[in-house]
Length: 454
Image (tube, rainbow, N blue to C red; front, side, top):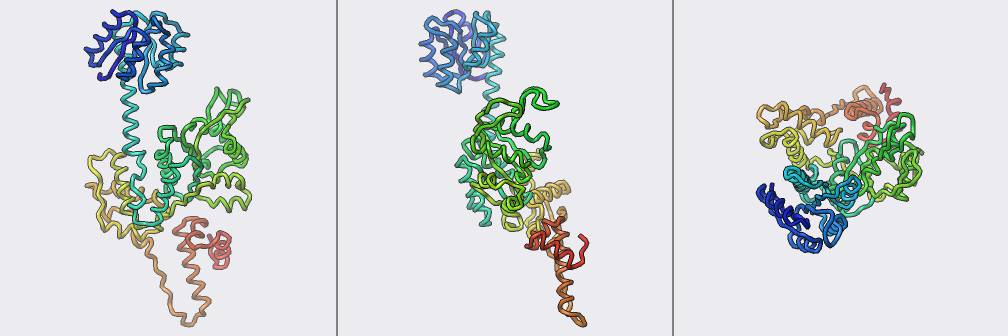
């Protein structure tokens, strides 16, 4: 092992022998025999680990650990003392010690304790390095790198949101990458080292939803065992994504509003409020303003959430970004599938991808590329590997001259075929209405007028 270790003990022989043993194992070591000397040594060398006696001639070792831990948080402290007790061990760990050894200390026991500390530091460094390099696979490009103006505007807004600490509302169709964008905002923010949680409000069972978000105390309801911290509490100093916020139960909407106003929560069955500093990002594919008008979503909650809205455009509105998006997806697939080399994509593939309607947006693009990669024998994606075809979007309608038919009959046939094509592409009334640029009510009227059995 490599690392710097300071042994602080008034028994000079013990300190020197432990330092020599550790030096033979690869550590750089030093010794100190008083609290005053320890302060000077730590300030000068800022060691990885300090092994400290609990009783020093000029001070208390535990109090010294507390002082040094506050000033040098990167240094780990291990207590080695002849005055061992459970209470002393608990006090030491509360003040900042990571381990507690009782004298006489076996060299193997000390070596193992230090190895555990160093391995933990290596893991922490690796996590920080990976976050810095990859940020969870989030887009690392600058706003100006994307061809489409809509994407450049969205990324510029997202960077501004990441620099702030307020509520963000992500809007857009399913599959546009709202969850991906939420994580990216978190990982570019000052909360990046804090926790990140995401929950789909539509998937929350109504009877368990309050417990999932706010937690519960023992015996709060039938079957509850022990205390459970909710996601709002777990995300303290971090970020919580509330996906599909439009599906949240009305009672929980009220309780969530209270949290946003007070920054305090109360666990189910609890008797005291708990202050929580978690940042909320909400996401939805619904028109929340329309839901407010219908009475299914609280107006006051909508106003609290709609502080910084960002609309993610559908893929069909930014097909010029397809090559860059495909590159990012193939990079992720290489990492996830453990491929030795990055997959390639033939340029003429985009002649097929660009005209497609992409009802599933970026999520569907990933599925298409992953399937094509599985069908490829050499990790090169070609036109024949694709599960979409130009005909899926290049739909043409032949309209014969109305010989012997009225203009009304011909236009009715045209309208009927267009509505049927929209239903086929959208696969739901809501999506078909959006494709046609009309409301669901207007679509229902058209279906009835055109004699279409939906």
